[in-house]
Length: 373
Image 1 (cartoon, rainbow, N blue to C red):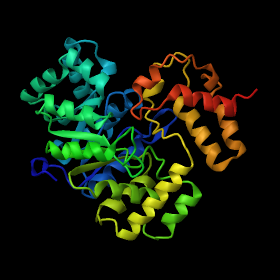
Image 2: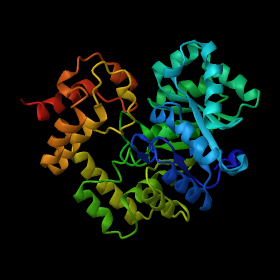
Image 3: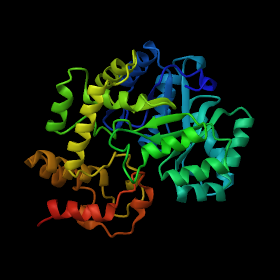
Image 4: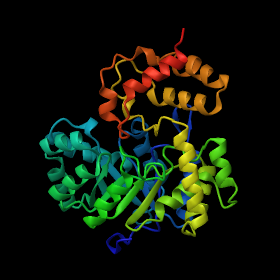
């Protein structure tokens, strides 16, 4: 790890996008226990954004972390997201509202969120980078960075134009390593070229690499060395240049499993790497939709289609082929929200998708499977 970030303990962070929920609200009791366990085991990095859980992630952190522990006990990262400002003048008030929501006087890291070619152009138009760097100079946050979802060429452009960037957050896991859309390996290479430490998001690909198809899971079970999620996290953490691996954890069992993999970290053996290669082949052969359920696509959908949930139904149908998927599609996800066949193909969802999925075409496939009548 870059010694400049020596305040960060170890290489494992708590992503607060998928927190424990109860009756539509963050389960404070469970989250308190998870925060305590995380810190007690020597980890201290927490990641959030205003859009996570509809704003509830930041306030839950105030209640369960920043309101209960002194400021030197944790590292807190927040982000500037394009949905929450229209012009440069909006940025400072929004930033101050984030500090208040989180209950802190400063952030340790502040990232320009979900940067791609389109978002980068908007951020430049609004002078968002310049405004954020002014806030940094004023001591409002310590380290300046970006979270990134685009090609390696776009990443190189951003790092060339803004050498002040100190850290880059990218999606990185063993499925996306050579994926032509995500380009995890190539993006890591660009970061190394520019000397930028990397924060990994989606190491378990939105839970997809924790809940493997049975034939893929059997490959890892034979190793008797940990859960599927633990292999995914260890894979991501084992590359030169990786400063931090963030995992979104929604219950204590997930946290304990992740901690067991990262507290006394061990590199993957050749046998384990070979098993992961085999799992990758099986996973890809299923032709599953590589959705991570970030839910960015649902924000502006005029038909209020629960796109990630409908994709999950189709994935489950391909793998398990049981009646439960039809039931959930018809009786849970489309009773108050649009069906796949309701899509008007406006394309707003595709502009927001970090995975660059052809959502409109994929919804046609979902409709063909579930909206037959």
